[in-house]
Image (cartoon, rainbow, N blue to C red; front, side, top):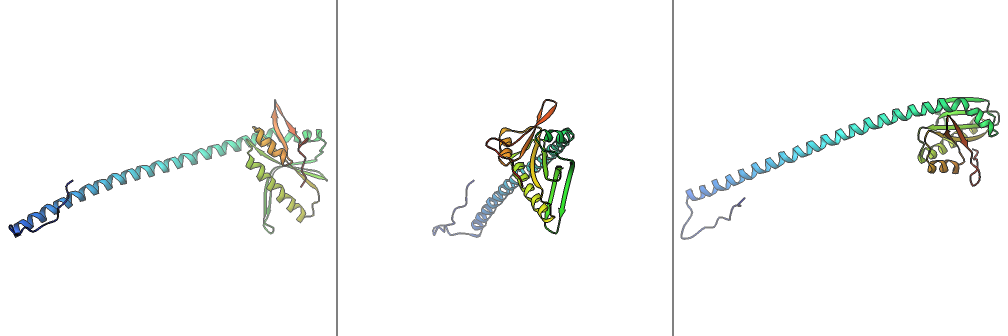
Amino acid sequence: METTQDFAIDPNDPPTFEKVWKTFQETREQFREMSRETREQFRETRKHIEATDRQIKETGRQMKETDKRVGELTNRFGDMVEHMVVPNLLDKFRALGFVFEIASRDLKITDQKNNIFVEVDVFLQNGDKVMVVEIKATPSVKDIADHVKRMEKMRRYADLHGDARKYLGAVAGVVVSDSVKHRALGNGFFVVVPSGDTFNIIKPEGKYFVKEW
């Protein structure tokens, strides 16, 4: 679009009201055209922004729905594992030399006074030892780190309540990758993995050692 030129006075052709008015009218029309184009560009830009915003919100909604479904599926897998593992867990550990007399599920510790809050999937115990079992459908490296923190909290809680028993940890899963298995064994945990119609317990040994808290 052409832009306005500087208004120069020609001494041989002095400005008249008509000429000045004509120039003013032309300049005003140019500004009107520029304003129309600017408004149109703004409307188009706003449309793109609104469309992008809708896409972002829809993507966020879909991600939340996916996370919800994954969470529900993981919980169902966890429940299935617990039902398969817990009934035979005492026998499996007995074969490894650990005789636990009591098996509890979904233990929760809420000690507000000492700021200790812990949830345990399976809690095995006798007069000398306690086995804290964390169950995940597909345990991750982060789950191993979380279980270490859980064991530290359990030890602190036990000390505050005069419980001198040794605390041990185990991690159970439907699908346990090699990296997660080695990370768990490296932290002194037993690893419970499926095997045919039952499951096996892998004991930390060789370069790994059972850790007691």
